[in-house]
Length: 364
Image (cartoon, rainbow, N blue to C red; front, side):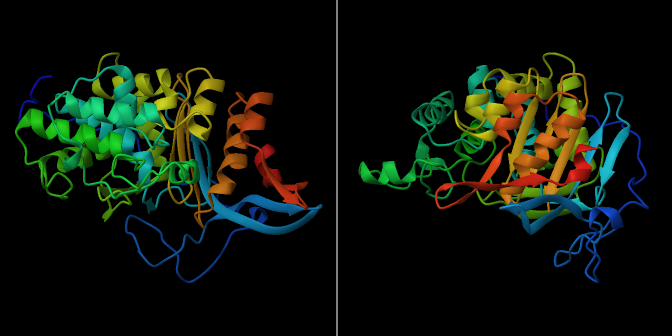
């Protein structure tokens, strides 16, 4: 591992600004109008996005019993916007979708890890045995103890009951962001930065992560909050997130952002887990880079530079899968395997009686 030169910062993205699209068709897509709208360059932390459109429907026995509104953007390989529905320019908190930029900042700071551990540094992992072993391996590259992790104690994703039955307890190692935190600690050790304050927004590493996100999205950070793991999370737009993923898959081989993107695609099981959405989709669609974020954010890019970003307004994760399947269909890469991965059945009496499905206009 090499120490990052003090003056080294990622160069700003040169992507052109794109005007909002979708005007004039919002009413047909279920626009939610209201007085608490968010628009323009600012962020109203208590507001809602007035241009959110119906992206998914909850259908039980043929009856639509609910709808999920949100926003989505798709950009072409050359960076132009081909689809934009809802509010794609106002800031959102990307949550774990920002891990691509955070892992890129870690690599920029001089941390060189094997590809599977680089993928783990950008992960929202399931706490499987190989994930925990990988977190320990990351820390060991700098002789660091797991006691330095500031992740909150947690249980393994989807396996918490088995873990508890076996006598296991909640642990910072099991928290889904522990790979990122371990790599952040290594970056601090490599550069001589403070270890105990590595999550502070003004810490050198967190400033680098913020600058890396801004460079990749091509826009200034609009808000800084605290993520569920305790790390800073910065608000940017959906369009900016799509640009971030596009720029990473198109970056020159060997650059920090391309190394992270390539590692995530080569080891998708380290990004999430064998049964998880991100892992299954990256295995099913060659060259796809995709990442989920809490509160129903999903971003991705294909190897040719086409990219997308989705946000479900109410944070319902169940709506992400069918919308994502429809988006991939619009990109021409969906097939039977993708459809099955993105299917969300509804049960009645223990048998399927309906589904959460993408709004019909998305299949047009």
